[in-house]
Every structure is written in C-alpha cells, then in structure tokens.
Length: 74
Image (cartoon, rainbow, N blue to C red):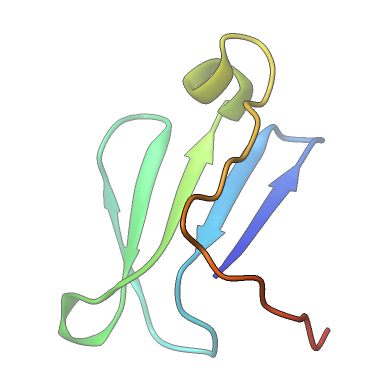
C-alpha cells in the first residue's frame, strides 16, 4: 500500500495494489473516487480537496494499528 499527497492540488491517493492495470473510476462524491481494476478489485482511492474532506483544513495524522513494521525497498 502506498499513500501519496500532492500539495499543489490538495489531492490524496491511497494505492492498495502495486503494478499497472486497466482501471475504471467510480465517483462516489465530487471529491472521492474509487479506481477499480479487473474483477472489480479495488486498486486505489483518490480524495480531492483532501484537507477539507479529511481534516477540517489540515491533513489528519496517520495512525497504523496492529500493522507489523516492514522495511521499504524503495
């Protein structure tokens, strides 16, 4: 999983699956969209106006619970 934020456009993207795949976009609201891959598998979540949608003007703190530490190979 990879979470990225673009401050220029205030957009947050949560990528759940790595690799390239053809996706279709399902728009839930004006700000939130789901990217669905083959078999309707959830590939990613895009959030526009992220500071307002998620944090009332600021980005919220990310808290991971019960997730073992993993070394990055990037």
